[in-house]
Amino acid sequence: MTIFLDSAGSSLPPREVLDEVIGHLRREAEVGGYVAARERADDLEAGYGVFAELLGARPDEVAFTDSATRSWLTAFDAVPLVAGDRVLFSEAEYAGTAIPILRRAREVGATAEAVPSDAFGQVDVDALKEMLDERVKLVSLVHVPTNSGLVNPAREVAEAAHAVGALVLLDACQSIGQLPVRADELGVDLIAGTGRKWLRGPRGTGVLVVRREAAARMRPRLVDLHSAEWVAPDEIRLRDDARVHEIWESSVADRLGLVAAARYALAKGIDVIEREVGERAQRLRDGLSALPGVTVRDPGVRKAGLVTFTVDGVAAADVRDRLARDGVTVTVSGASSTLLDMTRRGLDEVVRASPHYFVEPAQVDQAVAAVSRCAR
Ligand SMILES: *Cc1c(COP(=O)(O)O)cnc(C)c1O
Image 1 (cartoon, rainbow, N blue to C red):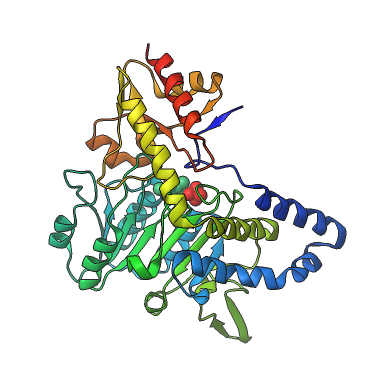
Image 2: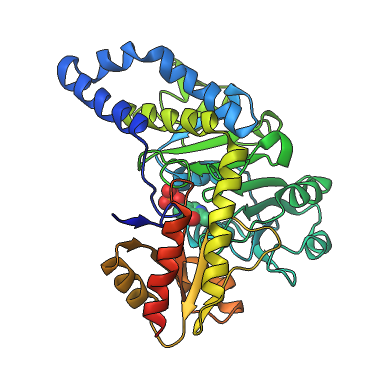
């Protein structure tokens, strides 16, 4: 009935994920959360291997959290920063990561600088190289932003940053589950991702990859009795794997659901998903581009499954609401979520439509027809 075009917001979990989450909640109600978790200990442990496979890392380089933002924040907090250091970030940076960069830089006396975009709207790697020096301790890069179909050149950014010894933290919130995102191929040090978007996992789940070479240079501070051990009255010992970034408490049902979502994506094949999402997104862009009064707003050379557009004279929220009446689910991305990018492009807001592989091409065409009714 509904045409669901919001996998960039919070997607529709498959049956396998739902069964895992609900099944575990029922089991907790029968035997209590501790016993229920013990019964699934092997599956929970196997989850690190599943995400290692998905993200091109080793199982001991994977940590689970309650959101992409939590993953990003815990990693960022562990990167040492002192007065005079520099942090570089992408122009399409999400406000949720730009805000902590700006706040901490001010607090410690470091600088936070945006890397300009090139003519195609991607991070300008030549400009980045000009900016890099030994004072740059971290480059924060959004892989696919929240407000367009852009895919940033992560591998090129990582190579350039590593030449001066800077760590690279990749916000892969919008790419994990729709594109191959592999630490070994991209060469990035840290990857933050969410369950609820393209991976089709439960809300309130996140993953963090910390590569071993990077871990040696980080100082995790937000540690508890899971990430560290109290071994003598005045002595603690931190875990030596990525789980030093986890804390003890978590939703076991959601974790199991997240792992089920990753298994589901791997079984379908990330390359197949990328192709099917890409075909639907391109079909949508082509259809929208042909409509008078509608402008597609996606920069980038390589494009992902987020399709953004504006309709002349119609507010984005009105487009969203009118489409909802026609059974089409989209969302709105406002300027404050990606302030630098939207300001540079002179945009206050865009409508965001993000078709996953489960959206039929005919439904994409119906969505285009619904937008054409808004534009009239
Ligand atoms: C959604 C999003 C986030 C934050 O994800 P949460 O699950 O809300 O923590 C970070 N970066 C980008 C680009 C996003 O689209």
